[in-house]
Length: 408
Ligand SMILES: *Cc1c(COP(=O)(O)O)cnc(C)c1O
View 1 (cartoon, rainbow, N blue to C red):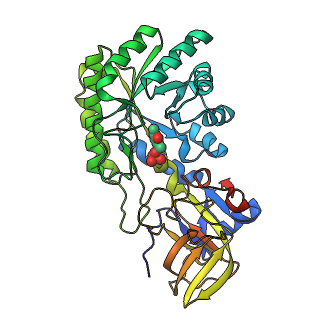
View 2: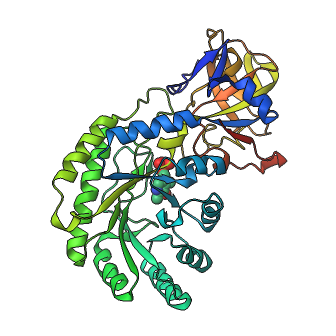
View 3: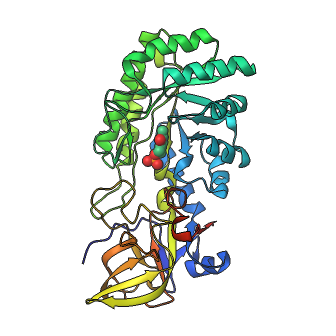
């Protein structure tokens, strides 16, 4: 039997069935009109944000990185919980506008912004996190052409990365941000252009569980911001410290020690250099805010045995949950937390693989896990499905189409 990832806190059973938002998931499946279904819990998102705020210094604002999950009702919920949003495309800008998010509290990072996207963002009053000198020149020219003062920050490619992070976004040659040593010259160009100077965006990595590593990276980030501001001869109105906080997905993963990260950051804030004394700071997080608050439910449509192995074949699959299948940025496939939702408190009775309905051997949601005996009609559940699920999976593959989504 292969181990399964740890089921996040906050989930229990009602009459043997996994419950979300105080009701068994069978209730929500009926309400949604069937499966496959992504189910997101507003309570769990709210609890997560409250815990984070309690642990972090008050001076730290919280932004939501929309690419983790742009489901419109979730964006509306987040608008009441966080202080700002980070977008990474013109499409996300449209979704943000449609959801009624306050666009003056939105920042736009990401390489390869097209002129049309830059113009839409500038007109909307969104802060651009500039990824290169070329992008800066285009943004400034668009500002002049439209007569709208662009709000410009510089994304810095730091000269370090976040140790132990699942995804490194800084250190060495990167398509993201401007190499640290070229930043002061670009700051002076931005200031001279008459644009509204917004400060730095420094994102060193994400999906880390090691609190010491996260705290160490934040200290390096603040030191770098101070040094670059000093060299640029400009104070920073704002500094986005990036993200980093990950969630446990795999067997043996444990949550990051949030209290330690918060204490260390408070210590850092207490000894900031003069050039950062008036700076507003934020962290931008995606999966940490919403990942564990979502589950993916698929109906078992076939139960088969092949060469002695049990396969629970569902109506879902990697076209909705690419990451759980191990095909979204992992080298070795490991099991996400998963279970039989309709037998949630039953003991383990057999080894089985939960697979999807796609005609490819990659379509595996759980490989040889220990589960209660499940039959056709039961619901399989994959946890940690609130981030990088629906919007980060190839829903059009094999003509399957998207899953349903519900926020409760
Ligand atoms: C993807 C991304 C995030 C969010 O990362 P998570 O791991 O979901 O927290 C934040 N900021 C930037 C710039 C990103 O590219």
